[in-house]
Image (cartoon, rainbow, N blue to C red; front, top):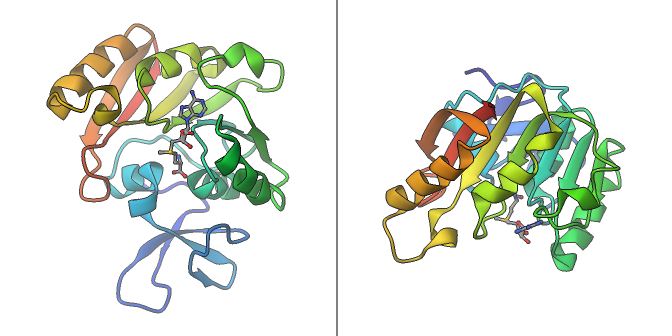
Length: 209
Ligand code: SAM
């Protein structure tokens, strides 16, 4: 799968190639003119691109991002997307998220709990993609609760961290359970390990059922 419009591979003066988007720097990442490095080791979505997953993004989509933290990944998303709604419930990272949103008129930070979508349903329009990286127990239920925002032909790009559900059991076994719950509302298109970028994490691409 090719990269969305607005994401390129650039060298930033070294031998390696990195993902990059154009926008205001957010977290001290290296830049080259307008381009800012997007490190897949710091971003599950970046790792899904690097792993060649069927993300379905072309650029310009409307996006709901769940688990935005300080805005590392969602700022890159907003660099290439249309309206981007970023949900984060922890006040501390949300302060940095607000800063990342400042120069990005299409990035809307929502200090909300993604388990309670009714608290932001009046703000969020139907979206082409949901990107989720909450890394907490009940990851599948968060995706199910937010399914209502996803357009019929839209995609869910989900990062699953099995250890957030159960630290003891085999990650693959926990992943199977997450996928089973997820399939109550989504048809799963693809699942891949995000290693070597993120240990014990999986990327999942799904559509609405
Ligand atoms: N996606 C971020 C990035 O790549 O820049 C990193 C996200 S971090 C792994 C997970 C984030 O999800 C944390 O900031 C946590 O506070 C947030 N989170 C967890 N459960 C949440 C919930 N129910 N509602 C909103 N945010 C949540």
